[in-house]
Structure formats: structure tokens, C-alpha cells
Length: 387
Image 1 (tube, rainbow, N blue to C red):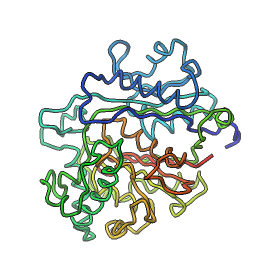
Image 2: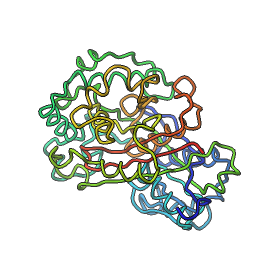
Image 3: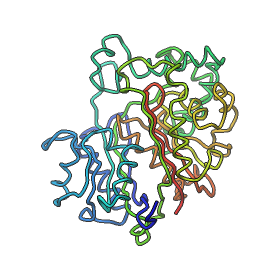
Image 4: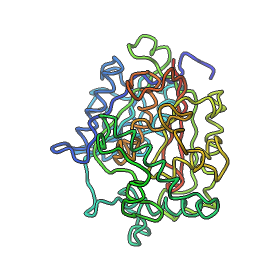
């Protein structure tokens, strides 16, 4: 980058309470809480914000359009986005980072939240999107990821026990995290996962992520401005995205998606000047247990087909060589529609700030967060450092 003083740096993070139900809360007030909390965490004021990648659930204004935040902040914005998938997680943070580094704005906020609605059976076909050619046939998110996992198991001998081990490990991280929805619900064993009801072969209920309510937000500014703010700065070192087709619109085929995200990871590592082996802590998107082991293959930490064996033992635990989803991830921490995308980045930031107490990776210097995955047919990832 030609101007290091404008390097995009994360200076504020905030997550609301995450729960299966948050009685009396609305999506809008969860987003407002998250935005105000992240700005305060950064040591800034709302008047300092001139860029918004923040969902607008309503009421009032133009639905889902970040331009509405100019009205809430009571000042014009220099930059904003107009799609709800740009208001959360890695994609939103990378978009905001690009805007900051290009000088389109100086302080940007990324955020979203959700308070319901759930479908009558508790499932979320198409992640609550209207998928006219998928939903009538029962093609839920879990079924889409199951197609990829089943083929992987057929080709490489990946076992249900290996998936269950990943699920139990991450759920046990949530079991001891007071902020996780499943705090205190465990501990779990692989046998517990395999004994839970089947949802979509090969996934049992405990292989699948949660559905709940909550919000999250992140503040990004320049490295120069970050030096004067109270929090440990977390510079954005690199990132990458890769898309095959519209998520959940058509069934994912392993032959098309077996290497999805590999090129994005290569771009991110090259930009950051590091390798996968250098990463101290991983915050991987875990809609299902299988996607965690597939992403280790994607990152090149093991060969294709070896993800199940790679994740065995204590490798993913706090004291393992690849500490992963120590907050409980989406399997036990939280899944909220889009805000969980942001929670992946927030956990990485907290690890680099070294504020996570009992789940803190000692001396963490580099963190990687990812979003989406093979079943969704797109991947975004980001590399963060300790400023």
C-alpha cells in the first residue's frame, strides 16, 4: 500500500447479548445498540463516523439501505453500501477497509442484527431468503452443505466420527464461554453428537449451527488515527473473496466447489506476507462441522481429503496447534442471519487484543477469520494482526 498511514485498522468492536430469544427486542434496536457500542469501544463519538456499512432493518427509511444511517447520525455520510451482505462480516469489513484506504471516508462502521423471525419448524431454508426453486423441495441450508460433505466422505473416507469430533470440540468451547448461547449446556462428546437426531445426512443436530437473535458491529479507521485511540489497534493485513454462484440458488456440487476459497486464501496470505502456518488463532465459519475441516484443506494446512484426520485430537483446542472458534463459533456461540459473520471478525480482534481471559491464545499475533463456505458457494476471509 502506498500510504501506510491510511492502512485500514479495526479500533472498535461490540456484540449484543446473543440468545435464542431476546424478548422485547427488535432488529433495529439491536443494530443501534451494536453501532453505539462499537463507536464507544473505539473511543469515538457518532459525529466522527462518515462511512456506514450498516444494515437498516426499519421501521422507516429505505429498507436494508445504509444511507438511512445519515439520518440517525444526523450528518451526511461520505461513503455507504446498499446491500445487506455488505453490512456484515469479512465482506463488509473488507469493503469498508477499501473505502478508508482510498480516502472515501475516515471512520466506517460495519454492523447488523436480528430479532426473529423464525420459520414455524425452526429451520431456515435459504438462510431466510426467498428461494423459489429451492425451498419447495426442502433444500435447506443444512441440506445444501450436506451434499458437499457426503461427496467428500465418499471420495476420501471422511467419517461421521471425524465430523462429530469437530462439533464436540467447538461446542465445548461454547460450553465454557459465558457469552455463548450454549454456555453451560455441555460438555459434549463425539458420541453425544452422533446420538443427536439426523437433520440432513450426514449431519446430526449437534453438527449444525444455532439459530438465534443478536447484533454486532465493528469500527474501522486509518492507522494514523488509530494511534490516538484507547484500544489496541488491529490492522487489516489482507483479505480475499471467491464466488461460484448465487448462494443457495442451485445445489452445490463437490466437483465444482472442491477448491472453493483456495485462490482467495492465496491472495490474502500474499497481501499479508504470511503463510497459513504463521496463523496463531482461527475463527472459521462453522455452519456445520464438516465446513471446518474443509476449510483447513482450503487453507493448505492439510491436503484435500485429510481434513478429518487433521482435526483429530486436541488440535483445535486452546492448547492445540490450530486454536479454532474458541468462542463456540456458530455451533455453540451464535448464528443470527448476518451478524454472526461479524462475530467471526470480532473474536479474531479480541484474541489479538488479548482480552479473552480463559480462552485467550497466549501471545497471539496473527488471526484469520472466514465467512460462508462450500454449501453457500462463496468464501470470504481476512487476515488480522496486532498493531
